[in-house]
Every structure is written in C-alpha cells, then in structure tokens.
Image 1: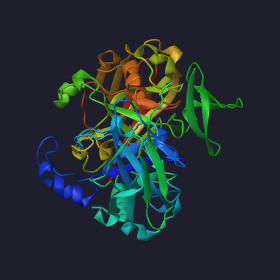
Image 2: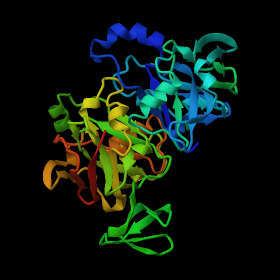
Image 3: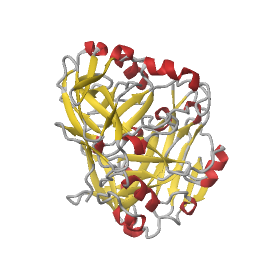
Image 4: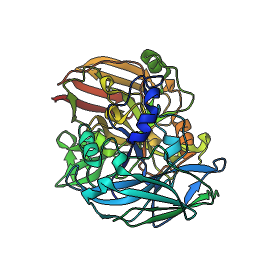
Length: 202
Length: 250
C-alpha cells in the first residue's frame, strides 16, 4: 500500500433519511452537497487479523463494515477491492473532522484484496461479533454508488497510485466491546477477522 | 542545512541547498542551479499531513468563530500538495479563494504520548505552506471539508525543509503573504492558539507521529481573494519563501 486511505461518511441512504431533519438545523444549516470525505493515516492500517488496540477509558468502538477500493495508475479506475473494518470512537455529530476519534493506530483492519468486480456495487456485508451475526447491509443502500462516488470525487481530487477509497459506512454500525471478536464476510472477497483489545502501554 | 526534493534526470530526489540558496547538491555531489530546479513538495511519500483550522485567534475572529478549545485538525493527501514555483488551479466560480501562509513542522523521530516539554525534540525541521481555502466550497460536514482542503495541487509547500537547529524558537517567526507584490497577511507564529509543541503533544496522544509527517499549523489574520494569474508568495521568517501562481480552470 503506497497511497492514501480515504473514506466517506453520510453515504448511507438509511442514515441520510434519519438525519434529514437535523441537516436543516445547527450546526449544519443545509444538507451535504459534496461527498463528506475523511482520511485514515498510514498507522491505522493493519492486515492479517492484527487486533484493534483500544485505549483505557474507551470500552466500545463503532465497527464500520465496508469495502475498500484500490486504485493504481489509471486515475479513478479501481483495480482491486477488500473488506475493511473502519473503527472509530463514537462521536455525536459530523460537524468537525473526527481526527482523534478515527485516526488511532490500528483503527483500520483490512482484509485481503481481490480483483475489482463492478458487481460489488450490490455486495452484502455480514458482520459477526463473537460468532453471532449482528449486522448486515447491502451497498445498494449507498446514496452514491461506487462509480458515482468516484466520479464526484474526481471533481476536486484524483484517486490513483495506491490510494484506497472506502465507499461508505452504515449509519447503524455495531458497537463492539473490548475483548470481542469481529468478522466480516462478503461474497467474492477474502474474509476479515480481528479482535478488539485493550491497548497495552509501555 | 536545508533539504529540498526536486525532479531531476527523470526521478524525484532529495538535495541539499547551499547557504546562499543558489545551488542544490545531489547525494552524489552534482550541483544544480536553484533557478533551474523543478521543485517538488519536500514531503516523504506516505507521510501524514495535518492541517489546523482556527489556530490564530485574530484569524478566528475575522471569520466569526471563537478560538477552539481543542485543536481543529484535518488531514490532507499528498495529491493536494504542489511544489515551489508550482501552479494552483483557481476554479471559475472560486471568487472567494484566499491564500493562507503557514509554518509547517516536520516530524523527525517517532512520537507517541510525547509531553509538550519534549515535543520539539521530535521535530526534524520546518517548511512553509500556502493552505488555500475556497470559501464557496465550505460545508458544515467535517468542516473544513475535503472539497476545500484536499483539492489537487491547492496546497503549495516548500521550497525546502530547514533543520530544526536553525529555528530555536518556532513561536517567534514572522509570516507574510504577498499577492502580486502587495502584502495581504502579516502575522507572527507567537499568536498561535496551540503552539507547535502543544500540537505534537495532542496528536501523539492518540496516534504515532512518524518521521516525515507534517503539521501545517494554521494561518493568521488576512483574508484576500485571489484572481487567476496572481502571483502569491508566502514567507516564514528564517524558513523560506514559497512562490505560487494561480491559473484559471473550469
């Protein structure tokens, strides 16, 4: 992975419908127009099932199941895809960039990459916590499907050269506690499994 | 010592800058006239690039905001950067596009849970950024949002990294911006809300800062809207003078 990891929030139609009344009020004043983008620093990314370290004082994290698209030399053309578990500390609103909540070391376990298939636009992702299915969502819930999202982002930023784009997060993502295991599955992609663990400090 | 990154003979490379800033030297001793260099942003590939909003009280006041209680941090990807003497697109509808001169701290040693007292020991050096904003594109979702702060080639950065040893106190540096020779920003890093050391303490409190990571520390008072074709020069005292030109785009 040599590029930058991007994601978008507020790309889930169900969440957008639920928040519609709030969009007209403070602090937002108007519904979002452009895709709402965030970045995950390189230190977030882990592969191979490394556990997610959670600091003292935080007992559960939001575990967002999504799909990460990988780009190469052709700007805006995804070449591979992987399951991604985007971890964040719950935060009350989308007003300010949630850097402290989203960018902790190890807060982005990625599964193995498979060749990109446009059929992923209708992928269903299943999340298990300690073996039990707790969440299921289909990317057909996305407000901007992957192709539309990529095209709209291209209006101001170019995705290429190892960049990764997570296509959206479910507004009803499960909270997972310290000590629990999380596993993601979606047809056509290597599965992802990890654990939420208490961070060890020196 | 100053280190720059240039495109030379078909590849990107780091060079050192002579004391008179007129000559660049490659690792194998080749000399290149600074005037002929193809400058790249002096950024290590993979580095995390932090920006700060509302980090000068006078700038917050002119925008109608209170200074924040916690640093207002956002992130940028490397495609948003452009080197010294580069060109930044100014969209046709960006009538409120303004330059923001900023001191940039470059991390030199891994930093995790570093105290403010020890923080500057983790800084390798400093450079200059012009963190343009386009006010028409601001939205109240993860504000300042990516359409404003992660635009391709809209953050000039450079020309070089000055060793931290040359800047014993990063909180007493003059910052200025000129547009076509006219001064539009004239401030001091003394007026930061959260100083460089505090920002390193804050960020390293939840993540590991790695060598090459960059912190763009915010901009002082002075909002001046640029036109296509303007020459914008951001200077940080003792660090460098960063030149950029805007160009019309659709």
